[in-house]
Image 1 (cartoon, helix red, strand yellow):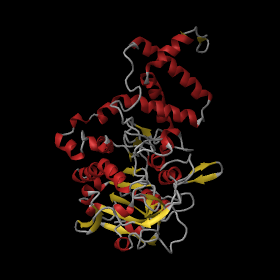
Image 2: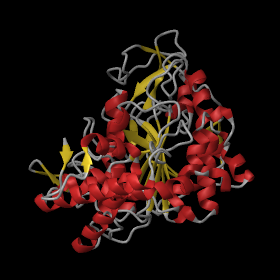
Image 3: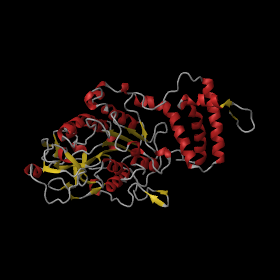
Image 4: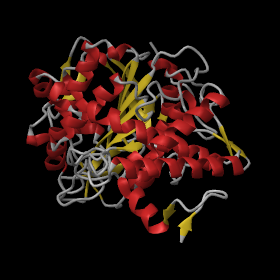
Length: 482
């Protein structure tokens, strides 16, 4: 089979064409040029360039640390003296057990010592000594509540607002709503834990029904080559690449003319365009040798205890500096033996000791680094998990805690939020919300607001419905706004 363009003679055999186009991302460079020409004709914003928010924004970028597995609020940021007094007694008066496994045991006090820190006097356990030094810059939400006690749907909800899969995640909505400030890098980058992916995998950074170019770009953090096929193989010569580019441009032009309103093709072209530019931008952005030894030491780069997570945190700062709109850093994966996330069913202390060693120092360093560079003034820092953990043990003789969705803690920091502030409380045992309940739609609505977006106006028409990140819910948490 030969490939023929219009009435011209055959240019390449099918075998020759397939062989040459295996040369990697270099073969899309001319698609980039074609897409740029189309974008100029279409007007500003057509290729995802920065767009105006609904109103003046406090933040222009977001970094989110998502701790997979369910961090125990009772053993980190939510001190409960009453739980100490009730230690070893039965949990009564709270209704049906909410744990995933339905094995209620006895009430268990925190396995860590709590102390007040900073001028705010914020309670933090001994598990997180580095984050304890940052409390005066943090805004805690102690009254978070989720819909599911199952990891996968709860993780989906924290990332997309829905417990079902396939809905656009928050990073995709921000890319759609605000575009990018650097056309050489993705608007939305995901840095998975080098040990594995979260529950649900890549669905957590999907663009769903939004155009495909808003999907998160996940870097390969377990290797020094962050993007597959970033460099074309040396075996592909310049002449062969030129032939590929000429053919690809002609095919794209013919298809674009035949399908002028095809959004899928337009999104694919934008992805190819970005891929071509990333060949130059990604190596520079991900190379840490330019960072000082002191900076790398502060994050813990090279320290085996953090399992490579420190490198991700430092990389996140570099991406934010270069105009990436939303960087999501994942701490923990879905599966592993022993567990590689915060899912402390069997032994809470053993599990959280291991996980905190990966997360505490690098995250504190990232917050402090952003602050010292003046970036925390226009960057929103988000620390979250899918749910908390039960005040009672999982089973009578177990030192572990089960899943707990009805009360847990997250925190914000940076642009537009109060510092050294605590919003809402859980009840005396950390079982239910006591005051100022915060749902995940409320959480998302507030994040969008800080970026200048009205969560009720940021919509996308799909299957007869104007969809939004917050569905039909969500109230702005005004108490956390500076």
